[in-house]
Length: 145
Image (cartoon, rainbow, N blue to C red):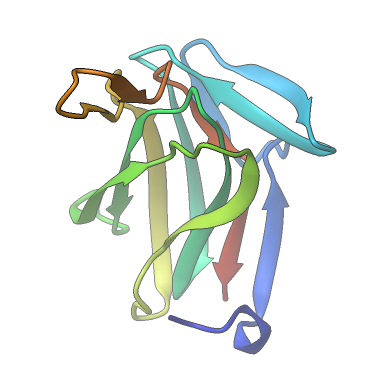
């Protein structure tokens, strides 16, 4: 894993106009002094176009979060990376949930989308565990220029 201290990083908060939101999002929500944007709308996404060689984002992981789809596109609009990220956590925390590999320096677009799915499981006694919702959240984006 890349040490954040070694990255020449640019930090973009979730309320920055560089991030294009589509669908139904709630903005400016505060949890444990962390302001975030979140959605459980299956058509919701957040995108950012950037110049650099690496991108990552922090999410406020929560008990009612679900799965997010992450797509990274090159300048031509071709998908170069696809990931599914689990944003569920039993205890709320802002944490780095995605960090792309180091790419050739260039122009890229990252899109984070809701999947409308969540992690759930049961034990032998059929007791249910896992997320209580399908939310995804965005705290901030980091870019290694």
